Length: 183
Image (cartoon, rainbow, N blue to C red; front, side):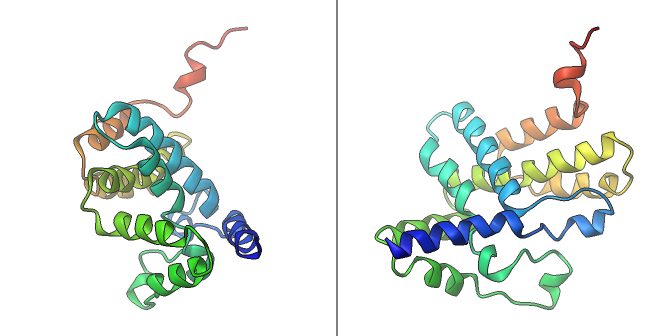
């Protein structure tokens, strides 16, 4: 049970690790845990829309994909030019004493390889979470997301991911409640 408690504390620390890329936007902020929740929720939605997708596998992959950042931090685009993180070692160290450690390791590895439908959908969920953040910042007047939105949109691998991105980009961040607002 000690290894379980340690894993829970390790995952909890993701609430306190900021996503480092927001510094380059000049607006917005988010923790790794907040991002993982958004990606997992998007993964769930995608699993309901993609026939044949293994919902549990997809959502779990989204939930776990950034767990290594508890040990290696959230390296942004610039930092990755100079720092090489040993993610495999971080995952191995985090899971070595867990009865289901191999499953966690395999899911993170599958996410990174991007060879299965679930891994590609999880990748897109990860990018769609960022697109939602960028679109929200742009909708309240931020200028830098305009540069990043096309870049991130091009990262999407699935047709479904592209359709969701296009819908997000065509809506305002507050349309879900503002269109029915009345006093």
